[in-house]
Image (cartoon, rainbow, N blue to C red; front, top):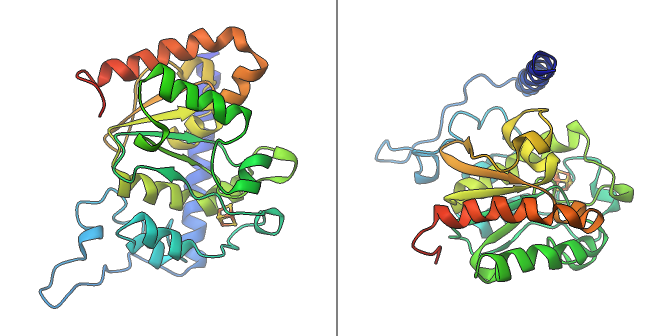
Length: 253
Ligand code: SF4
């Protein structure tokens, strides 16, 4: 089984790299130089950034987003986004919410019906469960952390996002992470963690173990919507969250 998973993972990585190279080719971009100021220095947002070098790839059609130096600038750069086929079905683009300097960031899959209507991530029943995890479990307030999704617009009938939609939207999430610089990311559910870690390994094998994402620690755990259907697995999430709490001794804030 492990060899099968390794092969699947390798195939996913190759497919992702192929799409990335095709995008670069379509955009006719070959290592675009970073614009420099009069002093010859690169813009601050591009210095020491793990996104550096992706300007001509992931951000090939969106240099404004790449250069954003705040979440407000990034949101403005995204604008009335029509970069993938999800835009016609949305009521609101759900950007993200919380402390722009949060040390803990929660990342889910994409907006559901309530989130689409209200324009805020995790506000339905699953959102209430996430709030309980943050408030009752971690002793924080929702506004102490940052909450976002991989996909900013609701897929029809809450279906899983498709690869081209993830490819179009993922740069915005990466930029959010770069701007917020959380110490820990809690990846909620299979889709978020598999997208961030570029793997197809099942969530039950990934959860509860620290992973690394560009120098940031990631704790994968189960999605609150899954917990609504499988309340018996709440204890697993509590095990994972306790590891996050332990990471911040003394307390997070
Ligand atoms: S899902 Fe992302 S890329 Fe697609 S339209 Fe919405 S904001 Fe744009």
